[in-house]
Length: 344
Image 1 (cartoon, rainbow, N blue to C red):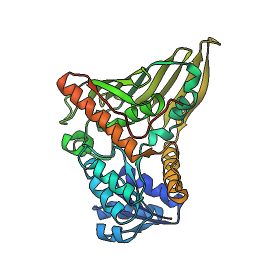
Image 2 (image 1 turned 60 degrees about the horizontal axis):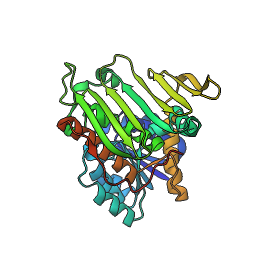
Image 3 (image 1 turned 60 degrees about the vertical axis):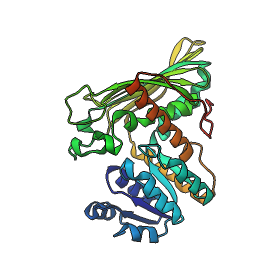
Image 4 (image 1 turned 30 degrees about the vertical axis):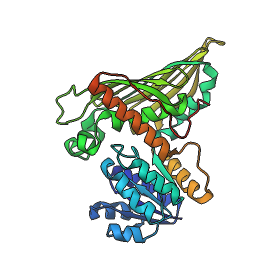
């Protein structure tokens, strides 16, 4: 199995490291040759000197870990050359070109997945696994907060893609994980409303605060709070049903302190489903990449791996949240994604 990683930044280096542990033939390309060499030397893998050489390398699978606004153009090149692709989230920063790309990939029988690693987080897995225990779902509250200058300690936050609208930045798109896992657990979204703003004095041209409400096909509502303002990273979700409640809470990063608890009306007691004071996120990325390799090798799509079509629908919801924040209106959807997401 030949795996090629395009992009040798923080995420690309994680993918390259995991690929080297999972398969024997791995290469990396980055326009910044020094970054690529550093990643390669740490993992004893090959550096490809140009995009032409990368295309000619004929990888079975290509991981695209470049800025959002380059995803579709880059993925098009490698699908056309015969590779399956795993694109870092989000699939793109705008609608344009996505459906045409996905149609071409399907016609060529090339698989397209999007790296939404939170689907492999043990807490998200437990929320999905135990959702039926709490009966009819009434509502969910999800949250993500972190201080933007602390998110990449080795880089000036003003240079990051997430600080610039033209690059697909802003906390709503950057935090697409919440939209994805809430749809994955609760079902498709039929309406979106959002309020968003830049509340800080950070030198960015995007929103650093957003409050979004989603209406799901089963009638449940979910609320998402996202910000770049908190000095300490927090992420979690509470799901309330007719027979109980599920709560996930994570604090910090490296180490991440994570707990998942379940309350059932039948017992009137809390049960700890998961507790880890030092969760290693590298294992989550490795499992996801393993699923991608398995999908290529077996020609079966793993249930946890986000498909290109599903990722396009996630983006549709996020862009609707932007539109709602700008217009003050609820954005409704007449159709649903081509691949249904059940609550099971």
